[in-house]
Length: 342
Ligand code: 5GP
Image (cartoon, rainbow, N blue to C red):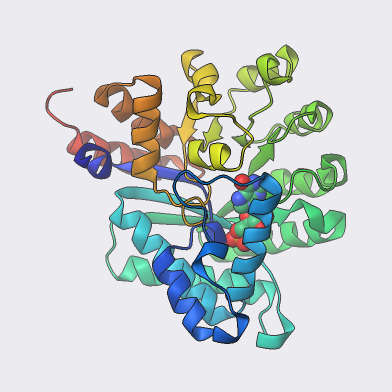
């Protein structure tokens, strides 16, 4: 539907290596034929489902394909171009810096390659403002988390606002938030914004409670925060009192089987409460989707009008991590693109 493609959009929850398209995967496979990787191993097609655990296996396969500065530069450039072509005007990409002895890749070089892609796309004149969040993979533990924060701090200072914050992600069943608290606190105190995956799987009330005390600036998923999903009213109250927006990824949650079907997605719970809810893709490559499709899915599943969808995409501007001047520019862009009928 053209309305959703033309709708100006803000994407705030996109993992770089989960966002790699079929086209780019093909280029990567031809660079590394010896790995014997096929398409079916890197994406979950229409109607298919995997467990969350199987989804994490998919990331491992993609990581084998993306393991040099050159790969990262290509992948990030392609991903940014694809988001721009889908009508995304502001994008916060996130990715976990990795090192790879074989190719000489360092964590610093990893981030530099993403920054280079962002700058190249800007000089190409693409109509998209791209920023970067450095991701902590929770399974790598306390020390790596602290090291990652220090790296993010350095880049925040040297990139003039391109690196804005931190993401906490990775297999939610591994490790505990309490071990990462010192690193997250340090990040917060030095001005890095925090977007944390929270209650993505059941029975994490204790950890969520702890992490909400920071508090984070945005929440990824938050699927099991509310009482109907086994969470609690006190968790909901903390989210509401601090007005912490939720990044919601419908296709990802249904295909990853943490949500049984679209109509039971927790978007409904938070949206009808009037709580800030942001539609995002999570991993557009792995889950074979794009942001236009996610907005359309939201509209058809929950009966939202074009006007309500417009408002939803506009309100996402309030929750970007870039400063107020950027928000004002985006608001003007939305105003200029607004259909006459609203
Ligand atoms: P990368 O950080 O390598 O660019 O993107 C892939 C990584 O993002 C995965 O290895 C994982 O750590 C994280 N990730 C992607 N999607 C999800 C998700 O749905 N849940 C969680 N917890 N982590 C994710």
